[in-house]
Length: 198
Image 1 (spheres, rainbow, N blue to C red):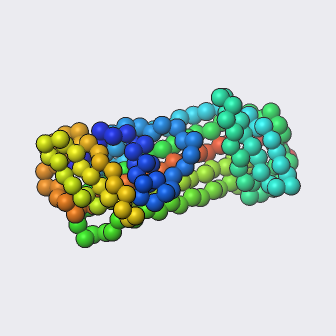
Image 2: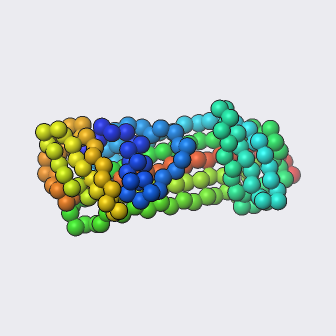
Image 3: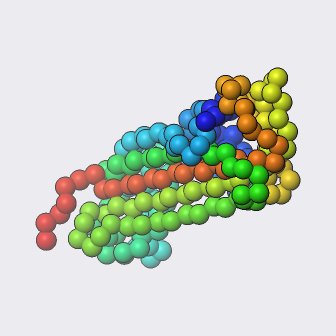
């Protein structure tokens, strides 16, 4: 229904303004999130290496091509026996956003963050996944059809004004209507070498 001209990073900024919740050091998101619940996203593949294995704390640290590191909790400590510093890894980073217009009274302004981790099955090469989803619902408190701008207010009173790309998309939109933004990030990392035979 509507295409916003602000970048997806605005959705994350809205999360900060509304709830004080958003992840740090995330890649810049794609622009123009759509409305009506349709998702838009990007997938990026990255290669790196294992930079540390901590058997005592059950963690593994991976280093990307630009020197950044990320540490995973390892649910199955036996996986750490097959991994060593310098082993190659491959990671797939996915992010998506869906923006949906909702009628007034159908929900209340809110912000939630959910996170989940998962590991590979016994006998499979070591792998892990992290997923984060931020869902925020803001109320439209002002519509400027001439400037093609909409001001949203979150659950804690923070406001953000965004520009709507196509003025036709403001037809039928009213003050009091709600905008729900769902922003998802996922990172899946696996050891990039043949499975060892037992």
